[in-house]
Length: 194
Image (cartoon, rainbow, N blue to C red; front, side):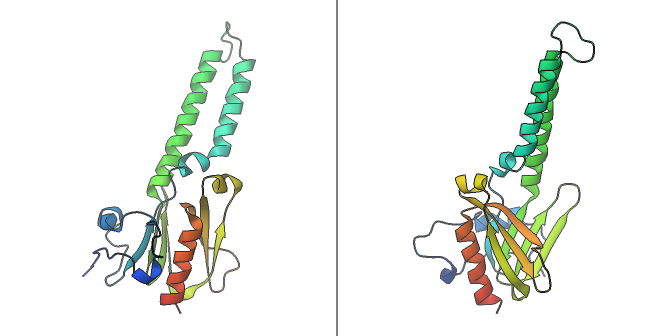
């Protein structure tokens, strides 16, 4: 039987007066796929990337589309439509921006990060589903990474590496308050994984 009833974080993992991290655990049953959590597992942390991931995650592509649109717009003849005119260039640029943002929003929607008293789980993917699961006792290293654009908004990425790997195998992208999230992960590893 799959017992998925959400259980609040253990008191020892939350500092007194510390604001809540992640999504509301009371909504875990609505958010999590039915087969993701095993019976008897306690959910400690449930996260998604910050909504800023929608823009920041594809910022380079957005800037490229704006630049390309500007070049095509300036090169297009406003009166002759030999290949493309300026209004068509703007329309194509806006459609490309909307398409890229829509794809990024779908990517954000399907990202889910879970920390339980037994495992760390990363679920991602729009067309191809990727699920990374690692028992806490197998995690050798965790890293917190922050790019400049993430530091500005107090975001960061948490990386996980298991025994025998040279590089991180999974990432929790653009988590809000990454230092607190990383601290919670390390506390769970030290408490349940050793």
